[in-house]
Length: 303
Image 1: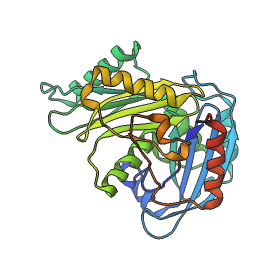
Image 2 (image 1 turned 180 degrees about the vertical axis):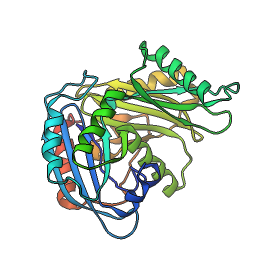
Image 3 (image 1 turned 90 degrees about the vertical axis):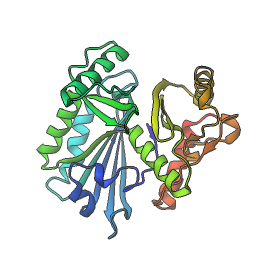
C-alpha cells in the first residue's frame, strides 16, 4: 500500500504528461498500483489547471507480495472491471506504480558523452552494474541535471508498461503519465520548498507498507537514491539508514527529511533529524482525510 496523499496538479504536473492537453482540460483518472492493492481515484476539474475535487475513491485488494518484479495477474482482471464503465470517456489517465517495480540510480557527470546514443549506453551500463542485471527488457529514462551535475536514471520493466498500454487501449483510453510513486513525493517536496522559499536540499522519502524509497538532494542536485525494505519499525530503519549515510557523507549533516506527518511520524521518532511535513496544496475533504488517517494509523506502529 502506498502512503501518499494525492495532490493533483502538484504531485503529477501537467507538463510531465505525454498528453498535456488532457492534463489541462480533462478530469483525472488516477490508478495507483501496488503489489497488494489497486487504488482508483477520479478527480473532477474545477476550472483552474491545478484545481481538482475528489469525485470517487475505490480500493481493490490484490494477492501480490513485496518481492515480485511484476504486479499479480489479478490486477489485469480488476483493471478490466474498473475500466469497463469508463471506456472511451475523456480522462487524463495517470498510472502510479509501486516503487518496488522501479530501479533508481544517480550517475555522475561525464563530459565526454556527446551523443544521445553514448548517454543511453552509459545509463544502461550503470544500471547493469548497480543491479547485476542486463536490463535489456527495461525502459530507461533519465533526468539530466545542469552542467557538471549528476543524472537521475530510472527503469521500469518494459513488459509492465506494454501491458498497461494494452489494457488501457482495450478501453479506448491512453495514459498521460506512467510514473513510479517516488516521483510524486519528489514533486510535492519540491513544490513545498518553493512555497516556503527553502533551499533545494533534503532527504525526500516515499513510504509504502514494506518499502522506503529515499533520495538525497543537495543544492538542487541529486546525490543518491536508496530503496530500503522495511517492516513495522520503519521509522527506526529510516533513522539507521540516514545515520549510516552521515558516516560516509558527513556533508549531508543537517539535511531535513521531507515526509508527510500523515504517515504518523512524530519528530522525536526520527531524532536527531528534522522532519518537514509535506502539506497538500489541495485538500480532498474531511471524509477522505479521516479515511487516510485511519489507514496510516493501522499501518504504523505505536511511537
